[in-house]
Length: 303
Ligand code: NAP
Image 1 (spheres, rainbow, N blue to C red):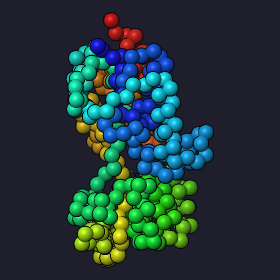
Image 2: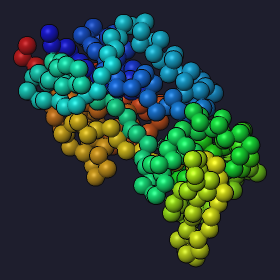
Image 3: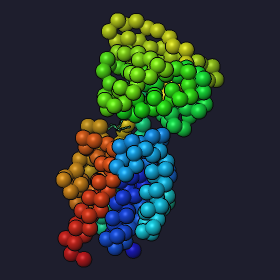
């Protein structure tokens, strides 16, 4: 059997593509590697998805999953290893089987980037985390460090102040990348102390994290901070290693206005593509457009 569309990734973009594809009567399957929801499941509070002035990532994704189920979007769990382009038909090779389809929508999102400093790998799960929403609870009343200056870093630093004693936000520049509303909240929060122009050199401890060494880029001063936890928010890398379409230098897929990639019949939606803005609202719009573009592409095929 040959599907009309295979959607890879069950975050906001993939689930939306599934809803649109099923409502267009396309023979659809959604392939997910880990679990429904994607990275937004790690966000404790979303305030900029219209219709929900405040909602958690988990709750929003539960609603999207229910919505997709209502339209019988079939979901299967396995890892996509490769896509073979055979012209009008593509073969998706997964960890379990091979599936044929006329079109593919890649909605695989991103994964948290690692810093690569000594101690980071060894202490992962022992004080080093990429998810404050998941792990913040373990650091009640303690001092923690958080690395990064983007929206994820600042939103999660503010979240951590609800349970920890103090959050050192360590940023490599003297200005944040985060939205102004998030910056203001962080600057006004007495539990957040900014460590500017600084990089983490190492993470140390015995069984668990006990301290980090930080170097100021301008003064070259090296200091140690006693912390029990280190939260990494230094950006994201796209999950696009399995596909050979055109990408930018960071691996994000290049797309045309209809979200087609450089391979005819393969589309990209959401955070995994080159875009100016990575939000739930933009991912949802991408999912809708990619499904409609896939439907139109099928209309151009000979059979
Ligand atoms: P991001 O915006 O790319 O920010 C990454 C941060 O990590 C930057 O401050 C960057 O510093 C820093 N960084 C990168 N590499 C580093 C290194 N090797 N050493 C030290 N610092 C390093 O990533 P993100 O915060 O994960 O956000 C990803 C996307 O999701 C963005 O488009 C963001 O706007 C969006 N998002 C939005 C919200 C929201 O509430 N609106 C919430 C979460 C995420 P520089 O600034 O110096 O480059």
